[in-house]
Length: 466
Image 1: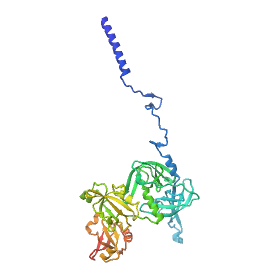
Image 2: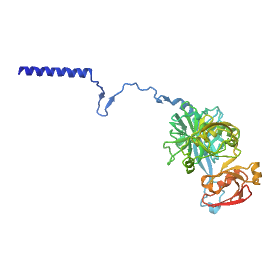
Image 3: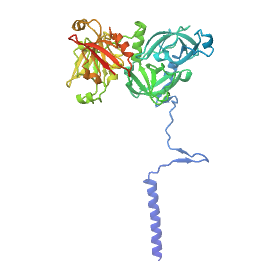
Image 4: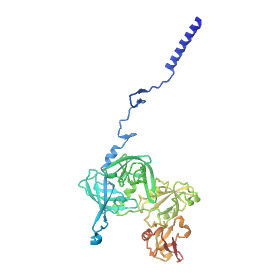
């Protein structure tokens, strides 16, 4: 019995030593210091020092860019005078029709020179009877409209200040990258310059039927931000904030800016020529790569711009580009989709030379193209592409009036319109592409339209569209 008791004690003592040795030398114990109070428990789980850069995100400092930008961004007020509706007594005593009521629109602008030139959006200043600019120091000046371009939604105005003004230099928007941090600076809700931060979400974005290429960001942009600055962390102006996509009119996650390279070129043209000089390549592109035509041609999954036609007497025609070529690059800019192409061409003028990299039957070629002036235009409503008549065309068709149809949309392909000369629409003669564009813009989508054409044999033809 004593032997059994002794063995039991020895076993118990040996087990205790073994367990203690295991705990001491082999088990990897993790400790969390827990302090409790009556409200919220606190867990100290890391001893890594907190960053001292309280004004930065992941080491990116916005403060310098913000400080350099806010004083160069202004508040723009658009005052439009509208006729006030006549009151009851006017019906008895008549009205001098001088009663006017002011309508006020607001937006933002960016000072781009020390002597007071300001870039903003065309829609901010459109139809203004009076323009006022308020600086970030609350000084207000009357502004003069220098020029505007509705197509790019860019306008230039000017103020006369007593001293030199802070301004922003244009950066190179082609060098911006998706994921890069940017700041949007503007005057939303009639406040002084307000800064929001985000990243570039996408480049070369197009919006519905607007033939424009935009930078897309997730920096918060609200009513009043239009015309404001989009800057990178170095404070370079890389875009002019223009639009948001929202069903409510307020910011919901996406905003769009005109790239600085496009804005700078438009500003330079307005200051030098009074209008925008557009250098055209002279191609028709198959934009909808998911269309029936694209699927039939086997190009619904291409990367690049498929040339579906070449405009006569254009730079592309002179350089011998062909239908079926796929544009892969313009100079050093990779072209993945149509807005890439239009965005880069929007920075060019007539007579500029560009290097076009194309894929022709699986082989890459480099072709030099000299851009030309606008000789063609896409007509509103019906989307015909027409060109001014050359001397050769006038002799061939025996007419000095009209415009030649060079391309038609897919829904008009069965009418055999391409190559004919469009003489009139709804009884109004057409002399050039500008007249054609004006007349077609007046066509009702729901009424009847009559067009008159002539072919190479001198045969006239009238078509009625309803």
